[in-house]
Image 1: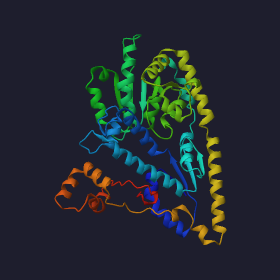
Image 2: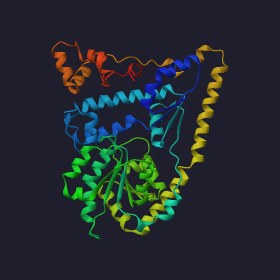
Image 3: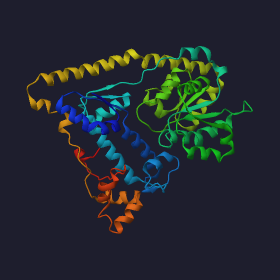
Image 4: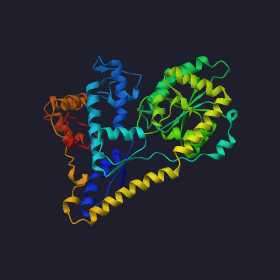
Length: 418
């Protein structure tokens, strides 16, 4: 059985357990990227700058505020709550990994992170496959392309991709516009994706210079995406945190669009700046320099393009991925054959899906009461008026089904609710 992503595992867990009891199987879990690691990196940006405060207002990462704000009416991030939330996520994801026979990740960085935490894991790195768009490469040269492109999914929120764009338009793009002196028309930035957040559009609308030079493009279909890749001169990936590897960066490589990326993005592909695969900017000035040189130098642009195409052929080819899958599947076939041929009932019932107990949330606990009340002031009021005995009581009766979270600081992974 193959299952992908922690949220899917959460929905499928009970059915998988019932199925295993009737007909034993092995489980391949494709975690893609480590979601908790993405949040750990995000909150590290906050604590690194504001470690002497507990509550901060950090507008450099509005997606962080969106993810960890104390309430929907507040822009404050409570570091203690954020760290508890991340700790909970880490425990859950590591427990899911322990339940699987074989684990797949999208990048070597994630594979090594899993092995550091859980060294006995059977794990393979299985990235993306990508074929080169030969027609685009042949028909769209340097002179036929223009502008900077960011493309990603937003789903109406600023978390992750929204933060990447926010960083770029606040810290990198102004430097580009100030230095762009070779043309009366500055290089245009197109922000494309599904569910572009209103807050991002509103921010751009408030600045005359940004509004004049930034275009928002809501994606409608696959052909729409191809047209954007075929017309852009530069693709940007300015992410400061994340998980796995970015599919859209691989896609830009395959369309022959030079990518200007952050050091974090480059590291997920194991790309160093000296490789000249895309252009890596260590900071805002570095990214600005990449954009200026790659946009204005046709020879450099062609060199970056060629290196990217060779990189895709070497690292994203279908044959390599099939070999990884062959190994993963063969490993699982051997294990299930051994389980089914054995008369030892204990061996059959020694699977993680059977031995791992995922219990209901426990409580009440002091930290759970505090944070639940801060995040849900209406419940706080109801508790004070005696309608509920505790915030935990509200969570059990209503909050759980409403998608609310009640977190307790407990090191026992088996007690964590998924």
